[in-house]
Every structure is written in C-alpha cells, then in structure tokens.
Length: 219
Image (cartoon, one colour):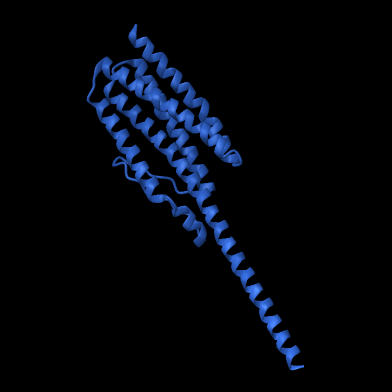
C-alpha cells in the first residue's frame, strides 16, 4: 500500500511538473507573441517616420523655393508642394492617433523624438529591438537632406530653379517607391492602405510637374 501511495505521489509530482513545464512554455510563447506584436508596431511606426521625413522635407524645399525663386511657375509649384504635403502630414498624424503610434517629430533643428506606445513588456521589447540602428539610419537621412537643402540655399536664379526641381523630382519618385513598399508590406492594414492609396497620385503628380517645369526651363 505504501508502495502504491508512493507511486501515486510520484505520478502526481510528474503531472504537476509537466503542467508547470506547459505553463512555462505557454508564458514563453505569450512573451514571444507580444514581442512580435511590438516588432510589428515598431516596423509600422518606422515606415510612417519615412513618410514624415518625405513630407517635412518637401515642405522645407517648397519654403526654400518661395524665398529663393523669382520664377512664377516655380513659385506656384512650391506653394502646391507645401500645401499638399502639409495636408498629407495632417492625414498621417490623424491616422497615427487612431493607432497610438508616435511619429518622429522633425522641427527646425531636425530633432527626432523617440518611438513609444506599447504597454506590455514583451511588446516594448519588440518595439525597442533594432531601435538604435534605426535611429542612426534616420539621423543619417536627416543629415543628408540638410546637406542638399543647404546646397540649394547657396544657389540663385535659374540655377536654383533647375536644381530645386531636380531634387523634388528625385524625392517624389523615391516617395512613390516608399508608398509602393508600404502598400505591399501593410496591405492587411485597411486604414493605412487607404492613406497610401491617396498619397500615391499626389506624389506622381508632383513628380510629373517637376519634370515638366524642369524641361520648360531648358527651352
């Protein structure tokens, strides 16, 4: 009887041990899942930051053109560039609020605020994963833009107009590729897909307009 009881106790300990192992496995799996959620949030936020950089860069370019160019067509295009990208930025910020995404804030000093927004430890870990590399990448992109902006600021007359239109043309084309990437990677996010679908024709229109104006300056 004692032997049977010992065997039963040993069997119970084995079952409890298995249950504990399962609980540990489930907890580990849950942490992994929340980490993946965090990574997905970070990936989407970092993509949105690239759209912020595009919008703010084009607004800055447009403002520079208004202060440097005397060409009425270039100035008209600059105002359109500012207006459309301000509108796009406002739409992006509204979308980000619905998704509790914190966007990079690029002020006159081109300073970036961090990304936040997750409450679970695993999700936070996922959000922070690769953050250092990303911040460094974004910093380099900002520095590169400032270099181009400052180079343009040193030009004048038709030389400025041509260089401005060339830079905008390249940026709009690059922005179009960014939108295509977003539509492919985030196609399951209906709200983001709608936003990007509205952004695409704006970028395409600006790209064509910049090319057209640039060609007319050569004549």
